[in-house]
Amino acid sequence: MPPGFFDPLPPAVLNRDTDRLWLNSQTFDPAKIRDGVPPFHPKGVLGYAEVTANQTTISTETDLTNLTVTVEVAASRRIEVSTKINSQPSTNDNAAVLRIKESTTNLQLISLVLGRTNASETLAGSVILTPSAGSHTYKLSLQMAVGTGTVDLIASSTNPAFILVKDIGPA
Image 1 (tube, rainbow, N blue to C red):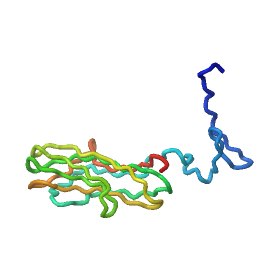
Image 2 (image 1 turned 60 degrees about the horizontal axis):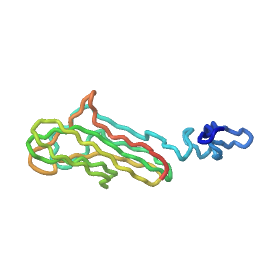
Image 3 (image 1 turned 180 degrees about the vertical axis):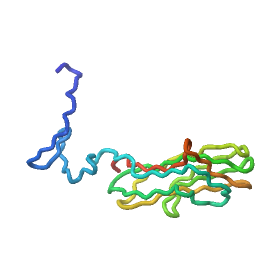
Image 4 (image 1 turned 90 degrees about the vertical axis):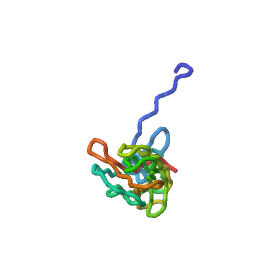
Protein backbone atom coordinates (compact mmCIF):
# COMPACT_ATOMS: atom_id res chain seq x y z
CA MET A 1 0.00 0.00 0.00
CA PRO A 2 1.42 3.47 -0.84
CA PRO A 3 2.73 5.63 2.07
CA GLY A 4 0.02 7.74 3.69
CA PHE A 5 -2.74 5.24 2.99
CA PHE A 6 -4.41 3.32 5.75
CA ASP A 7 -6.03 -0.08 5.70
CA PRO A 8 -9.79 0.23 6.04
CA LEU A 9 -11.13 -0.81 9.41
CA PRO A 10 -12.08 -4.47 9.47
CA PRO A 11 -15.72 -5.35 10.02
CA ALA A 12 -16.98 -6.71 13.29
CA VAL A 13 -16.81 -10.49 13.40
CA LEU A 14 -18.57 -12.76 15.88
CA ASN A 15 -16.63 -15.94 16.62
CA ARG A 16 -19.38 -18.49 17.24
CA ASP A 17 -16.96 -20.95 18.87
CA THR A 18 -15.94 -18.52 21.64
CA ASP A 19 -18.95 -16.17 21.59
CA ARG A 20 -16.53 -13.24 21.35
CA LEU A 21 -16.95 -10.24 19.10
CA TRP A 22 -13.89 -8.94 17.28
CA LEU A 23 -14.04 -5.27 16.30
CA ASN A 24 -11.02 -3.35 15.06
CA SER A 25 -8.66 -5.98 16.53
CA GLN A 26 -10.32 -5.78 19.96
CA THR A 27 -12.40 -8.51 21.53
CA PHE A 28 -15.61 -7.88 23.47
CA ASP A 29 -17.82 -10.12 25.53
CA PRO A 30 -21.26 -9.97 23.85
CA ALA A 31 -22.86 -10.06 27.31
CA LYS A 32 -21.40 -6.58 27.86
CA ILE A 33 -22.80 -5.20 24.63
CA ARG A 34 -26.16 -3.57 25.33
CA ASP A 35 -28.67 -3.36 22.50
CA GLY A 36 -25.99 -4.38 19.99
CA VAL A 37 -23.84 -1.34 20.82
CA PRO A 38 -20.26 -1.78 22.11
CA PRO A 39 -19.70 -0.14 25.52
CA PHE A 40 -17.55 2.70 24.17
CA HIS A 41 -20.25 4.01 21.80
CA PRO A 42 -23.07 6.45 22.62
CA LYS A 43 -26.33 4.62 23.19
CA GLY A 44 -28.56 7.48 22.04
CA VAL A 45 -31.95 8.52 23.37
CA LEU A 46 -32.85 7.13 26.79
CA GLY A 47 -36.01 9.18 27.32
CA TYR A 48 -38.07 12.00 25.84
CA ALA A 49 -41.19 13.89 26.85
CA GLU A 50 -42.96 16.74 25.12
CA VAL A 51 -46.06 18.86 25.59
CA THR A 52 -48.11 20.65 22.97
CA ALA A 53 -50.41 22.63 25.29
CA ASN A 54 -49.80 25.86 27.18
CA GLN A 55 -49.34 26.03 30.95
CA THR A 56 -50.32 29.49 32.14
CA THR A 57 -50.03 32.01 35.00
CA ILE A 58 -46.79 30.73 36.56
CA SER A 59 -45.26 33.02 39.19
CA THR A 60 -43.52 30.84 41.81
CA GLU A 61 -41.43 27.81 40.92
CA THR A 62 -43.79 25.30 39.29
CA ASP A 63 -43.08 21.84 37.89
CA LEU A 64 -44.03 21.82 34.22
CA THR A 65 -46.84 19.35 33.60
CA ASN A 66 -45.78 16.19 31.72
CA LEU A 67 -42.19 17.41 31.24
CA THR A 68 -40.72 14.64 33.39
CA VAL A 69 -38.81 11.62 32.14
CA THR A 70 -37.54 8.52 33.96
CA VAL A 71 -34.58 6.70 32.44
CA GLU A 72 -32.36 3.70 33.19
CA VAL A 73 -28.68 4.63 33.16
CA ALA A 74 -25.98 1.97 32.84
CA ALA A 75 -22.85 2.09 35.01
CA SER A 76 -20.06 4.49 34.05
CA ARG A 77 -22.04 6.35 31.39
CA ARG A 78 -22.22 10.05 30.54
CA ILE A 79 -25.63 11.50 29.69
CA GLU A 80 -26.98 14.81 28.42
CA VAL A 81 -30.29 16.24 29.60
CA SER A 82 -31.52 18.98 27.25
CA THR A 83 -34.62 21.10 26.94
CA LYS A 84 -36.32 23.82 24.94
CA ILE A 85 -39.46 25.74 25.82
CA ASN A 86 -41.12 28.95 24.70
CA SER A 87 -42.31 31.35 27.36
CA GLN A 88 -44.39 34.49 27.40
CA PRO A 89 -44.51 37.11 30.20
CA SER A 90 -47.60 39.00 31.30
CA THR A 91 -45.60 42.21 31.95
CA ASN A 92 -42.44 43.92 30.64
CA ASP A 93 -38.87 43.54 31.89
CA ASN A 94 -39.10 40.38 33.96
CA ALA A 95 -36.75 37.41 34.24
CA ALA A 96 -37.85 33.80 33.97
CA VAL A 97 -35.84 30.82 35.19
CA LEU A 98 -36.17 27.33 33.72
CA ARG A 99 -34.64 24.58 35.84
CA ILE A 100 -33.53 21.06 34.92
CA LYS A 101 -33.89 19.04 38.11
CA GLU A 102 -33.55 15.59 39.59
CA SER A 103 -36.01 15.46 42.49
CA THR A 104 -35.32 18.72 44.38
CA THR A 105 -31.73 19.10 43.13
CA ASN A 106 -31.12 21.85 40.56
CA LEU A 107 -28.88 20.48 37.81
CA GLN A 108 -29.04 23.49 35.47
CA LEU A 109 -30.60 26.96 35.63
CA ILE A 110 -31.49 28.69 32.38
CA SER A 111 -32.55 32.31 32.78
CA LEU A 112 -33.78 34.92 30.36
CA VAL A 113 -34.90 38.53 30.65
CA LEU A 114 -38.37 38.69 29.12
CA GLY A 115 -38.48 42.13 27.57
CA ARG A 116 -41.92 42.54 26.02
CA THR A 117 -45.38 41.73 27.26
CA ASN A 118 -47.04 38.85 25.40
CA ALA A 119 -43.95 38.20 23.23
CA SER A 120 -42.77 34.60 23.03
CA GLU A 121 -39.15 33.99 24.10
CA THR A 122 -37.20 30.72 23.93
CA LEU A 123 -35.38 29.18 26.88
CA ALA A 124 -33.07 26.29 25.94
CA GLY A 125 -30.15 24.53 27.58
CA SER A 126 -28.58 21.28 28.63
CA VAL A 127 -26.46 19.68 31.32
CA ILE A 128 -23.92 16.85 31.05
CA LEU A 129 -24.00 14.32 33.90
CA THR A 130 -22.35 11.10 35.02
CA PRO A 131 -25.06 9.65 37.27
CA SER A 132 -24.92 6.42 39.23
CA ALA A 133 -26.25 3.30 37.54
CA GLY A 134 -29.99 2.81 37.89
CA SER A 135 -33.23 4.71 37.52
CA HIS A 136 -33.19 8.50 37.40
CA THR A 137 -36.09 10.94 36.98
CA TYR A 138 -35.45 14.36 35.43
CA LYS A 139 -37.98 17.17 35.27
CA LEU A 140 -38.42 20.82 34.36
CA SER A 141 -39.70 23.70 36.45
CA LEU A 142 -40.36 27.33 35.53
CA GLN A 143 -40.78 30.50 37.54
CA MET A 144 -40.96 34.27 37.19
CA ALA A 145 -37.77 35.09 39.09
CA VAL A 146 -37.63 38.88 38.82
CA GLY A 147 -40.45 41.39 38.49
CA THR A 148 -44.16 41.19 38.85
CA GLY A 149 -46.67 39.31 36.81
CA THR A 150 -46.58 35.76 35.51
CA VAL A 151 -45.00 33.71 32.77
CA ASP A 152 -46.71 31.18 30.52
CA LEU A 153 -45.25 28.07 28.93
CA ILE A 154 -46.22 28.30 25.25
CA ALA A 155 -46.38 25.04 23.28
CA SER A 156 -48.11 23.67 20.20
CA SER A 157 -48.02 20.63 17.93
CA THR A 158 -45.62 22.47 15.60
CA ASN A 159 -43.50 23.90 18.42
CA PRO A 160 -43.56 21.52 21.41
CA ALA A 161 -41.77 22.06 24.70
CA PHE A 162 -39.53 19.08 25.48
CA ILE A 163 -37.03 17.36 27.74
CA LEU A 164 -34.59 14.90 26.16
CA VAL A 165 -32.18 12.51 27.90
CA LYS A 166 -29.52 10.77 25.84
CA ASP A 167 -26.50 8.59 26.53
CA ILE A 168 -23.49 10.30 24.94
CA GLY A 169 -20.82 7.72 25.76
CA PRO A 170 -18.65 6.28 28.51
CA ALA A 171 -17.75 8.36 31.57
